[in-house]
Image (tube, rainbow, N blue to C red; front, side, top):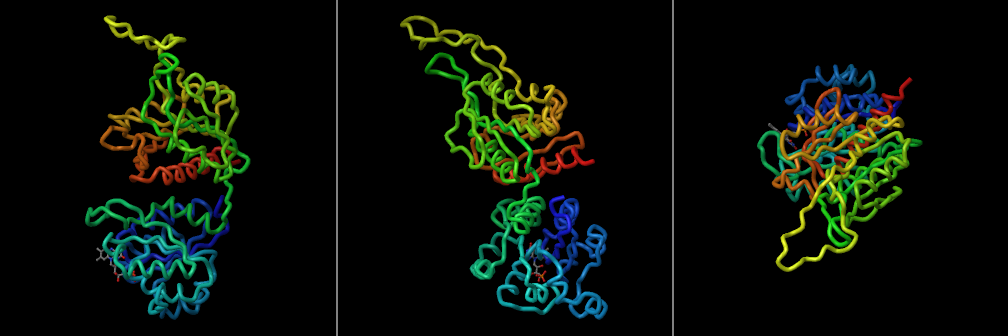
Length: 406
Ligand SMILES: Cc1cc2nc3c(=O)[nH]c(=O)nc-3n(C[C@H](O)[C@H](O)[C@H](O)COP(=O)(O)O)c2cc1C
């Protein structure tokens, strides 16, 4: 497991996002980390030490002046006896105290006494985050070498206000922890992956074609994220205007049939992520020469025929990859259609998203997806496509580790 043997001191301060720390503890421990929690007095207003202690299977440290705790580990050892200190959520208040070197409670004293890397996941009202004082404190902390993940854009849990201030999601925080502890973690080293991306162009004649609005951003980001985790990635891309991702072998194709051939010829692989928006139909017999407009004649009819189903081909192939992931771009009944697709296509995961024009997802930079597996459905918040890619790559790495566990 990627965090085996790593000791994380998790400081929970008093923000509404403290409830997410419970999931964060689970996610860290699932990856082998040992989590030792410290809670501020305010944090205990939001989640109980009982819940934090039960989930972390550890004593929860709350008091600087506890004789027992001081005799047991003591705040100086607490500050040093770990591989990383993670502050999640980090309140505006705790950031201010850190920036000014205050140490009037256990959390701030530990943060002042530590010589370990510190990662902060701030969470606060957008106005608090935008306040010049908080901005100064953040700059000071960054100059002091503290690491940050987030905050992210989105809706605030308590006020519904939108803006920057939402705490990064637990898996994003885990990914940042992994990167700090081991700048080159390679849970997918030695694994091969095939990713498809972009639209396909189905020719009508040599100059005209049928296409769709896919930009390739999501597929390219996934290829890059898998490569970052150490996979040997082949990206089969339809026609896009974005650059080839780094560290990935990119094969350029135009038509669905070419894409299918390029994918199948690269099997076997450990992972297949079929993100491309493959045209369902092509023109049955595209013209060799440009179809000329004839004065007075009716427009030529377009006879369509079905294209190969690449996801289904891969999902049922005799050299089926261990993990097959499909994308389901839907404009209605997103979840029901996604579930049906999981079964029909022989996939392990379907990433379902609503691409209705009003969502702006098709061709945009953000994505709001639901992950459908045989275990159930997980709705991810609205995220940048790079963040979706990072999370998905980690999820795939976890699934593959489970699949191949002895
Ligand atoms: C309902 C409620 C929600 C709060 N949410 C946040 C928050 O998300 N971020 C933040 O910085 N402060 C938030 N605060 C304010 C902090 O709890 C307050 O500044 C406290 O002193 C922080 O203490 P600590 O930094 O020692 O944990 C909230 C307060 C209340 C009453």
